[in-house]
Image (tube, rainbow, N blue to C red; front, side):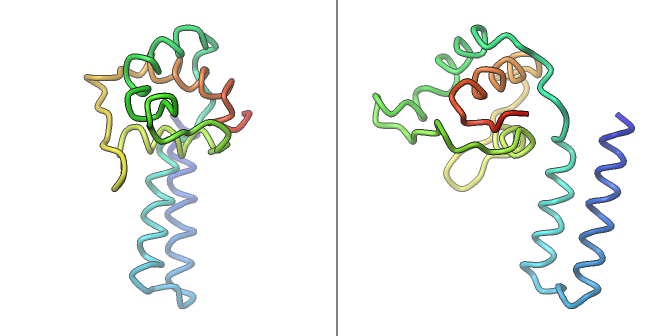
Length: 124
């Protein structure tokens, strides 16, 4: 937990320094905000159960991300684990957020272990 707090403080400091050095536009402030949010999702994958993660993927993710079903293929994107965690929890214009009620933390970590095997998540 202390590591996440330190990362959040560092990300906030970086964002403030960027804005102070002329990066104070809306996009600069937005980038600092994203960095602060992303820092909250840092940390190693807490599961090695890729088999369970595949079951979770099939249940929660495949309907939108399975290329065989016409979905948005996500294999080989090699995103950092923090970015994938944030994408899952917060979503974006193309993907709705997935709540902890629908995907608990333990299942999400198993899912991340599976996503490493498909190169969706970069090797830690």
